[in-house]
Each structure stands twice: as C-alpha cells, then as structure tokens.
Length: 146
Image 1 (cartoon, helix red, strand yellow):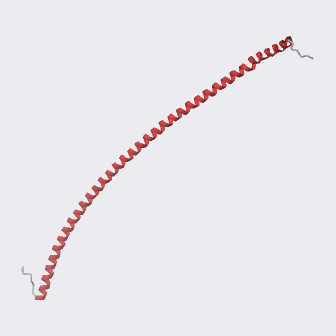
Image 2 (cartoon, helix red, strand yellow; image 1 turned 90 degrees about the horizontal axis):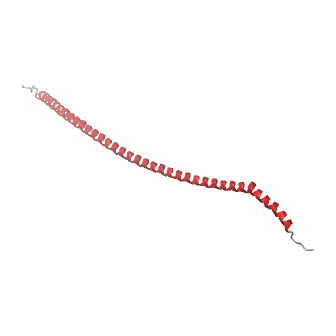
Image 3 (tube, one colour; image 1 turned 180 degrees about the vertical axis):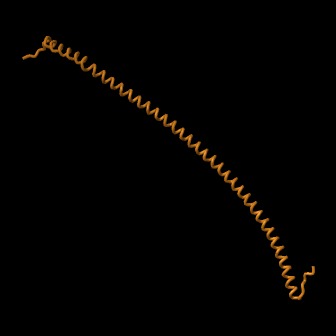
C-alpha cells in the first residue's frame, strides 16, 4: 500500500489550524505579549525610580554629612574660643586675687610693723620703769629726779 498526500485533506486540516492560530493570536498571544511588555516597562521604570531614589538619598546623605562636619567644626571652634576666653577671665581673676592678696599682705605687714614699733616702745618704757624701780630698790632711793 502506498501512502499518498491528498492536497484537499491537507488544505482542510491547515485552514482550521490557521484560523485557530489567528484566533489564539488575537485572543491570547497579543494581550499576553502586551501584558509582558507592560510588566517589563514597569520593572524597568521601577528600577530606574529606585536608582534615582538611591542617588537622591546618597546626595542628601552627603549634604547631611557635610552639614554635620561643618557643625562639628563650628562647635570645636566655639569651644576653643570659649575656652580661651574662660582661661583669660580666670587668669584675670587670679591676677586680681594676687593683687588683692598682695595689698592685704602689705597692709598686714604695715600693721604688724606699727604694732611692733608700739610694742617696742611700750617694752622700752616698761623696761626703763622696771630698771628705775630695780635700781631704786637696790640703791634705796627714788631715781626719778625729774
């Protein structure tokens, strides 16, 4: 038996196949390809948006770090300035305290000198009176001849 291809049967089988393929193209394949293209575009747009956001975040972070660095240097400068000012004020207070202490010390020395002179004069007078009294008792007469 010999197998032969009948063109009519082949045409009758190809026509429904082609009609089915055309119907599937419009019903399933075309919407599915459009959906897949849309999904790919959304993925690419999302990735681009994420990269843009990441770049924006890095830029903001760099700005914040720059401001923090600037603020830190300002704080360091301010602390240094205030420390220098405080040290100068402390030095001035110490110098003023030293000056006042030296004045008090000089006044105390003057007062002690005056007290010493007064005590010395008092002691001299008391010694003279005592000496006159002792001499009078030893000699048996009053030495205050005035």
